[in-house]
Image 1 (cartoon, rainbow, N blue to C red):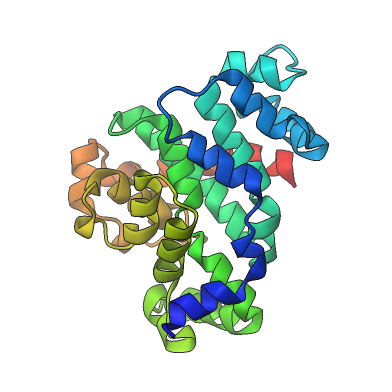
Image 2: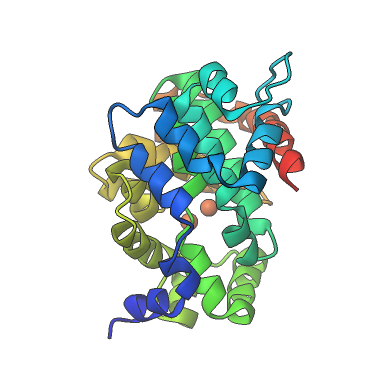
Length: 266
Ligand SMILES: [Fe+2]
Ligand SMILES: [Fe+2]
């Protein structure tokens, strides 16, 4: 059997991905979703509802009034933002298991960065950019869950010796997080945008929708713990109208914003 299929099949939790996430992501495919449909998804999960409300009331969204119900959150934030929040909250336990919360934090940072840059440059819808950034590394969950120790070794090599992450993963796992992620996207029947982001965020030019993939790729590089400017595609940056010299400032601003979300959920 193909190694990627074998790895994904080995993770039972992933097969049974929390249905609330699958349903929420699938709702994104529908052009019209009623508030009731979305509200019903989380209504019966009390702990999820509490966390969503905490996030909606956090400084990240900056509402002056207290938002006390999902229905009010929906009318104030709009459905797409609430869907994003549902996914970010519901996916936390799964991502936190994969690497001591670091993967989840990184995903939130890239999500916040993509949202920020999309709003600034208008290259794509800011709400879609958030979820695209959030989900990009989902395939890492599979590798980490299969062998946490071995995956920690991969991360160590990537951080310390600046090794290429996909190559290093392939060396140890005979697969990589793009391959495992792509298979998950297929099994979960994720929307085309998200499937593309997962498959091409390390190689945007191969995607049929290169702009969103390039955006996630750039923000991913920007949000690494140690920022390496060499990893940023300068030509793409130019098309966004962003000066290379402004990157450090941009990074700081995004990090600060992302921390507002992270602190509310940890
Ligand atoms: Fe990645
Ligand atoms: Fe990443």
